[in-house]
Amino acid sequence: MARIALECLNCGHRASLTEDDLPAYGLEPGTSLVTLTKRTVCRQCGSRVVVAYREEDGTAANRSLVQERSNSNRR
Image 1: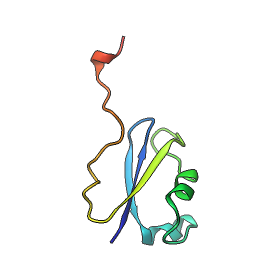
Image 2: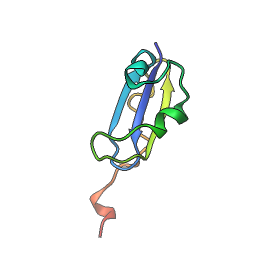
Image 3: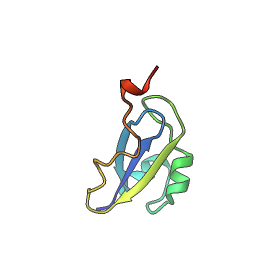
């Protein structure tokens, strides 16, 4: 079953849902990811800067699109 992975580009929070979960959010299965991300708000930080991608086999579940922040880069 295809899953939709969501990631906040502000704080790095990640979540996922299935196509079958979309009607609970007022969307039809197969809704475009553009439509989904326009309606998505991060539950952790409230940001609307969210990226979504579909994964067929779960291989993308551990992939992060947000670069890890290190203390050495802060001043």
